[in-house]
Amino acid sequence: MSNTGVGTAPATSVAVYLSQDSVITTEDLRIGLGAVGQLAPGASVEVLVEVGIPSATGLGSYSLGAIVDRFDLIAELSETNNTRSVPFNVPAVLAPTPTPVPSSTVTPTLSDLYIETFSPSVTQAGRGEAITVTVKIGNLGAGVSPTTRLALYLSADGIITFTDSLLTVVTVGPINPEESVEMSIPVNIPLASGLGFQYLGGLVDQLNEVTEQREDNNTASVQFWVVVPPTPTPTPAPTPIAGLPDLVALGISSPKSQVQRGEAITFTVTVGNLGTEPASPSTVGLYLSPDISITAADLLLGTAQVVLLNPQVSVQLTISVTIPTALNAGQYFLGGLADVSNTVTEGSEVNNTIFILLTVN
Image (tube, rainbow, N blue to C red; front, side, top):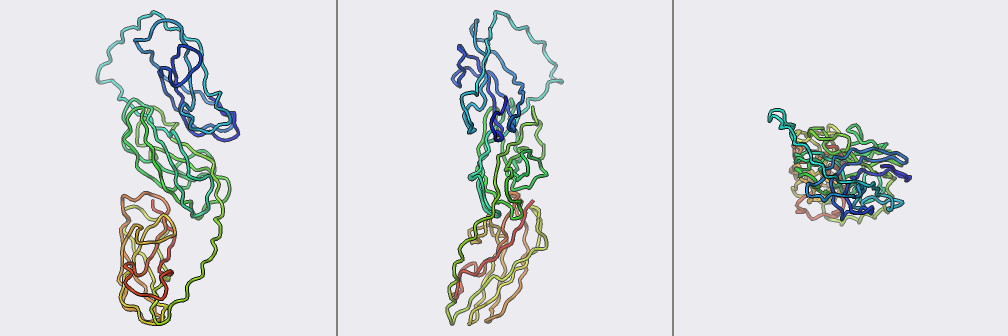
């Protein structure tokens, strides 16, 4: 297979068919399937595909053909050159009876994971913005693939490895032979990402835990642009209503910028009252969010009680939490939300949140 286009072709599959004519289609008899890794412009690759002629096949002349990207999942400059065939004859030759193999030396049936499709919801996004990536993972092997990990990365090139910038990790599988599963995965573009042309990619079996028929087809990537997000038009803050308290999330801090799933850690949140009247006791919540909009619908890590606060007084609180072990790895926004139950009548309700960036490994 060759890529004669100007863009990198994502990973796909090639199917081998037995046909009664030279026009190869997916309606013909499929006798083999192989994986094709991503191809740079002008690159080519040879793929070895094992095939089997069904014993019920009639004798005579056929065409042996192949179709790459048989489901037309890749947008291409031309869709008319994805097939090739050669004449093939099925002779009246009996296959030799195989010599039995002692059971102690039989090789276990292996799976073969590959990324069939990899499609982000947009082709460009700003630093800190949330996008969704749809990934289809297939199993070309003869054995069921066990549960494993799919990692998404941002890379400076199209070669995806575990040393690239990790966005998130999700669990995938088990997958039966010649079946696939599709997943929609939310990710955030890191605030520290370089601007311009990058690659968004995936790596299935991230830790190389699954013994497979092939290990060179576990990645896929697409071109992606990281841009400066547009500056939002500032919304004038409403003038606080006189004669009322005004709870504000003034600060949030973490002893480290990266944490591990299952790790116990203590964060600090500062809450103040900028109003003109005392604020009755309330609760401040600590959340993990995929975006900068911190709400009570996000993942609650912990809470702390805020005592009665007089006007122009603030208090610093510590909240000890354990990072959930079931959380997907990646970048999140750690946010504080004052008055989580909305029990205090305030002069303004738009200044109750604050956030910082936190990476979960």
